Image (cartoon, rainbow, N blue to C red):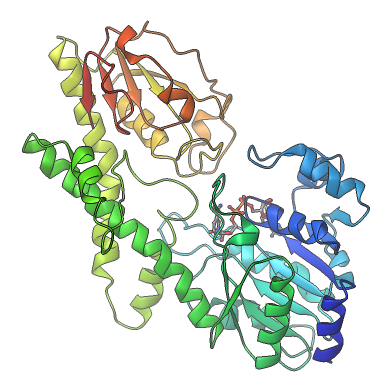
Length: 433
Ligand SMILES: NC(=O)c1ccc[n+]([C@@H]2O[C@H](COP(=O)([O-])OP(=O)(O)OC[C@H]3O[C@@H](n4cnc5c(N)ncnc54)[C@H](O)[C@@H]3O)[C@@H](O)[C@H]2O)c1
């Protein structure tokens, strides 16, 4: 059975399904189409399905032209009807895995995806989970649901886990050039999953189990969360000592080995780093283990917006103004430079905290002209980006978009609070935060 499918993939006759056409799933889907595979994109969002078939992008760094080429090729199909999964030889799942209100893993998207797929699972199919999650999810959550209609994983169909390492808008690496870790529940499943990914990705990295693959992804993101926390803590310490942490980092990073630079900021953002480490924390509790490093990093990183608010108050104080009633223009709503992704962005916490203290906050972000509805910050939906001007009491730099690096900050006579080290040396009244 497996040899048939391996051959089908080699011959590019296999049909590839991708569930969840977001930041991760969409580029994956397009890569398979570009390599000549028939591919099916499944999503519960009918609008995304329609836009793709019209050749329209909804993600800034994925050009419409690329999507249009795929749509025009006749190889791409999108649907909200999961019956189309029956036509697929391999199905890759990239749906959200956020935290719930109690900061515990929210498996609801994955569970509902598997429930919708389950009736259409067929013999010989490969199903791969790509969403970031705790070790054991593939075996404990995904497999039992997919087996509900009688077929057995590992015997009748194949299951694997292969974490996504997408870094949206990265110029030096793309979906195709980032090696991909793959773990499966059986050797056949592993062979098949590797074969599928080898069609589009430079190198696969096989590991012995889905649990190892799930853990590898968490380690990568925990590493980032902990190092960002470390540099945020050092920022606060060095500031007290009158030492410029950004200059320190520039100097330290000249060491050719044993060090890599991380940069301080207003807090963590995005769909990964603030969330994923707590997937491990949650699972480790089941084994009586407390993941202190992760918790401490979370504590430090989540305290950063308060630190920034204090710096805003200090900066206003210097010019004899209270925060209450002050008009603040925040530059940057996206959580990182040059992307339109504002999920979990610390900018929202800054708005919230400043407004709680009576400030009047507006924002500018060339990539987020209007705030879209979101679960966490629904109250800000509909607010619009405004033009940058000096007609405020303070400018707060929250994101290092390239557009902002081009600003001549020397033209502003108001205080500037800079969390990204881009307003110096031009700005006259720059307070680092
Ligand atoms: N964004 C990144 O940079 C990144 C990087 C690495 C890993 N990841 C992980 O990849 C996964 C997906 O993240 P993303 O950023 O692509 O999310 P996203 O929100 O951009 O996209 C998820 C898509 O899934 C769809 N969806 C939701 N529920 C569904 C369901 N039941 N059935 C079908 N479709 C459904 C949504 O409509 C959306 O189009 C997450 O686990 C995330 O942690 C993300």
